[in-house]
Length: 309
Image 1 (tube, rainbow, N blue to C red):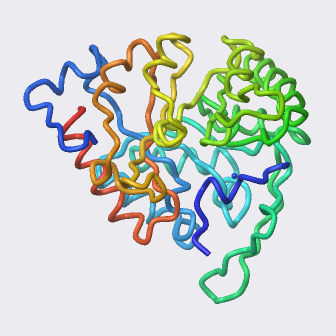
Image 2: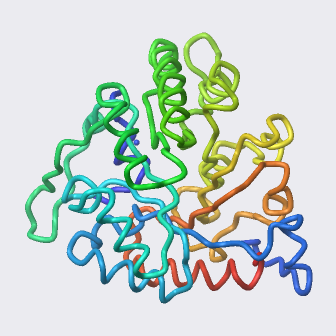
C-alpha cells in the first residue's frame, strides 16, 4: 500500500511552471518577496527520517533548504526528541524550524485500509498521536517550547456537516491558545475540504467564514487545491493575507500521482506572482511517500530556484 499524506490522515478523527520559464523575470515573480527561503515538509521523509534524523536534516541543508516544517514521526514526539532538542539540532545545521503539523482529531485508519508494512515486512506500528480535540494545550505548549512560528492542523474530519460544525470550535479555540502562546495557528487542506457535505455547504468555505481570520490562517496545499478544481489566486483575492503558508508539490496529467515540482502539469507561475496578495510567509516543498525522497526534493528545489527565486 502506498501511504500518502491524504490517505495517512484522511481518517484523523473521522488523511512548475508546466514548461514556462521566467528567464530574467524571476526576481519579480514574488512581487518583491525574492530572494526567499525555501522550506521542506518533513513528511516527505516519513519512511526514512527516523533511522537517521541528523543525517536526513544534513542532506536537506546541503540541497539548499533553509526552513523546516515537521510532522508525524514513528518515534513519537519530535522525531524522538523534545522540542528544544529538535530545534537545536536543526539550528546547528543551519536550518530554521518554522512550523509543525498536528492532527485535529484522533487518528483512525480509513475504512477498509490496512496499515502499510514497515521495512521489516511487518505492519507499521505508530506511537500514540496527540491531537487538537483531546490534547490542544499540550500541543500548543510544546510548539511554543520549540520556538516555531506556526502550529498547523494537518487535517480534521470534514466528511459530514456534523463533523465540519464540530471542527470549527476546535480550530477557533486552538487559534486563541496559539495567540496567547505567541504562535500563529493555521489549517492545512487536502482536496476533501472542497467537497460539499449533505446540505451543499463546502467545508473549506465554512472554515474561512466561521473561524477568526486573524487567529486561524490557512496553509494552502496548492496541488490539492488545484486537484479540487479551485484556483489558489481566486482564494487569495477573496481572502487577502490569510494564506501565509503554502505546500508545493506537483501532479501528473491524471491529477492522481504526486510528482517532484516541475516534473508534473501544474502551473505555479500565477500563484507565485500573487504571493504578496496571499500574505505568503513560507512555502514548503512536499512529496507524499516518494520512492526516493532525497532525489525528489533535490529535483524540486533545483526547479524552484531556477524559476522562482
